[in-house]
Image (tube, rainbow, N blue to C red):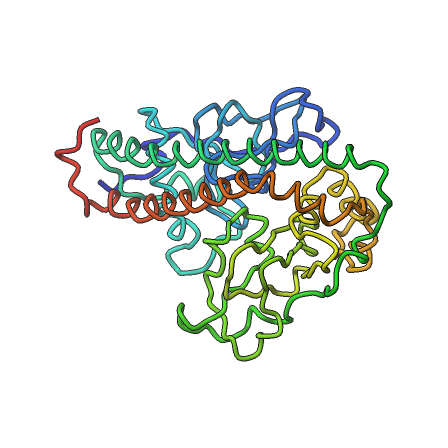
Length: 380
């Protein structure tokens, strides 16, 4: 049934405290200025405030109300919300259903009836937003079906994160055990380095089976895995020289510096010039170099340049290649990489499973909301 959001929900618009009350020391209440740290369903917290003004209560839906408008997450606990967010809570407490309803209507929310894109959405806009609400019985069934899939995805993500922490712990011990090794720079470790193709985003879109997929900065910052890359398929006519091979490493150099990915499977794929491409030489195992880029020391080194200017700079190739690593023998590198091989394989299997689960959820979502799937015989 078509109803206005204000008739079904309580709405709280965000208000930002003064920045002097912000901290990164877990002091006070978690704070979100906007959608910057949104995850797939729940946000990550990197800032707290000791003087909250507006609160998004636990389990309410958090919506971005400034460009990009319409992105949604769920508050895992009480959160102070800034002016880039609104907190929306169903009056009947079916907030999981509300999350999926809003997620299914993101494109409608982003656009006014005239077809123009919202740069911001006001309280009045939200209150008078008309959506097709299912019956309460259907709401419970829909949220149960979709939330079960999301819970499995979340569980898989936790497992993958635990595996990554274990791998990095083992890597740290490996470096400590070889502390006497000489130092080298990343420049000493690569035989080919450069940025991706210019203007690749403007390349003609071609058929899925014949085109080359493209890794973009957004793919990296949104934590997409290799199964999700390349929603736009690029022509292979002009960009064959940029094709990535097994063992190549790509690392972001714009927007958010230092996010990396190791190509471990044969892919028909390139990257654009928002990323740097590294091809490791014969004296180094690509996985060893890649794991170096996942350490806190590397992160701190890369992000030193962020503090040098108020405008986020593009990372220069020579800055990246000046980073120092331990020049451990290739034999020892290979032994270590073989030791963690099964964990890396398990991570890839989990990514593949999550990709399938995500596709299943996103296929079911509109069908459940639009009544294409009969809910009468489904028990909860």
